[in-house]
Every structure is written in C-alpha cells, then in structure tokens.
Image (cartoon, rainbow, N blue to C red; front, side, top):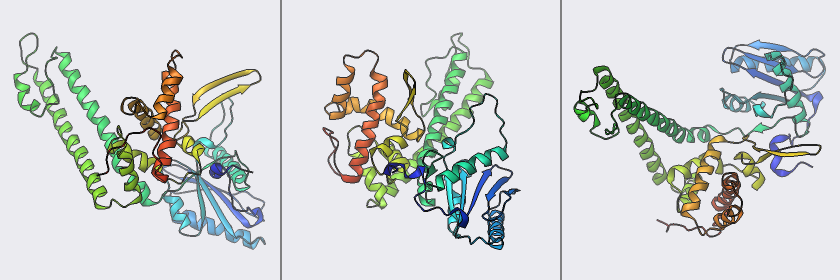
Length: 387
C-alpha cells in the first residue's frame, strides 16, 4: 500500500485502459508534439501541432471519436506534460473543459544512462507515455505529479520573487561601480550614498587627478539604475504591508503574522516560506522535508555505503531560505530545543557544523509547519508579543 505522503507518485483513481484516452505532450516554444494511446485502435498516433490549446483540444476530441468508432466508449481523457516554461496554465485550461490534465515533474521521469544516448522529441514522448501509463495504473516510481496551483496562488509568488531578482541586480550594480572605482585606485568613496552622484566630480585618484570622463558617465548611469531599483523594491515592500494590513484574516497572511512573532524571523523570510511552501496541504513531516529538498540521497551497492548529500529535488528557494534561517536561529534562539540539539551534536564532532545545519533546517521547517497549522510553538522558541 502506498504511503499517504506519496500521493503524487501514483494515481488514486481507478484506471480503465480500454475506456481511457491517454495523451502526452512534449512542449517547446515553436511546436507541441502530441502522442496518444487510443483504445481499440492499433496505431499509436504522433502529431506535431502549433502551440495552441484549441488545436490540442480538437485533436483530443478527434482521437476520442476514433476510439468510439472502433467500438470503445471513452469515459476519460488523461493528458500529461512535463513542467517547464509553459507552467500550469494549460492544465487549468484543460481541466475546465473536462480533461483530466496532469503536470509531470521533469526530474522524476527515468531516462537511459547510456553515455551517448539518442534524444529526440519522439523518444521523449515515448518515455513520457510509459511513465504516465505506470502512474495511471497506480504503480509507484514511474513518475510523480506536480500540484497544479490556482492563478491566485501562482500570482501571490510574483512579488517576493521579483524582489529577489531586484536585490540581485542591486548587488551586481554596486559591485560594478566599486570595480570601476578600484580600477583607478579610488577606495574611499561609497557610490551607494544618497548624494554620491553630486560628489562624484570631487573624487580624485591617488595621482591627484579626477576620474576619466567615460568612467564618470558609466558611474552616473549605474547610479540612475540603482535609484530605480531601490524605488521598485520599496514599492513592492509597501504594497505587501498594505495587502497584509488590509486583510489580516486571510489564511496566508495569518501564517505570516504567526511566523513574524518568532524572534529572528523577518517579514520577507516569513512571506517567502508561506507563499512558496507552507500554504500547501502536506500529509506529514516526510512530505514537508521532501518538498524543501532537505532529504538525503544514499548510494548503496553491495558493501559500498555512502551519502551523496542533499537530493535537491525540492524547492530550491525554500532550501536556501531554510539554510540561512537555521544559521540565524543559532544566534536569536540559543535556548530553543532545536539549537540545543544542534550544539550537542556538533560540540565534539570536528567539521560537522555545516552538514548538521542541514539536519537542523529539516527539523526547523517541520516545526514551523506544525506551528502555522496547529499553533504549537517550537520548544523553547521566544516569541514577540502579539501586536
């Protein structure tokens, strides 16, 4: 019997192959390659179409009519495609029209381990179809399915992801400005200051000459970009606070308010954890750790036993946040049960701090998941007073 936290790895609905039209789609920017398995029809059709959902729907209905003409009554049309650039909109669109649509985790499909294997869209659709059929039959291990979010859930992730991109751009611009200054030996000028643009003409190199004209022009352009990025980051943060204050009873906002009460947890970290992960319905702690990508990847063969490190199969954003948050908890929650456990495990083991911080991150996200869903405060955690 499949474990409850592995629902995504097998289909729980009964599969009647002689009454189900099975279709997989290999998607690209310029075309879609559609492969079908039609009950009652010996041929296995393969059709390349333009990336148009209406054209895909027409093709599905045509293949369904072929099955009916061959004497097979179709009760279900099951369609699957891999996660990728197109995202989940097609699955939502098909489901609204009565199609049983699924999105396959691209990394869960088994591929050939040959050093130089053939790879074409035709071969990829055949592998997708084999994996999808195994999943429909309820056999674990063939592939796993992604949860299809709603439009609102997808859009809720946009502000903090955009903010992350802007922060990286801000860091890049600052580093480029410092590099220009260092080229001419200027180390005592901070280009990030509010009035840096006005003071740029007074900067002198160690030779006692002003900065060259092209360097000054480049610095001014970078300063203008930096100012725009700072304004955009500030606008995103203000909009977020207004949204939370406007609807504090919303489920996600309530989770954020709970997390912010933990000393050492900021609003940005709390919102990212909630919007990326904690709003989902996980069956148990194993599912939580697996989604965060904090599970191991053991390598065992005969007498050989080794651990290859993190599986990295989960949400990379959540994993990075949790690793940073775990280091932060060591400073802000020194008397908590998790931190005491970590210190005991690392006090006598040399070089174990970094590997064990992953174990702490796994325990931490499970504790936070229980906290936002049941209200049980992690052992020893200090909370801010409720506003």
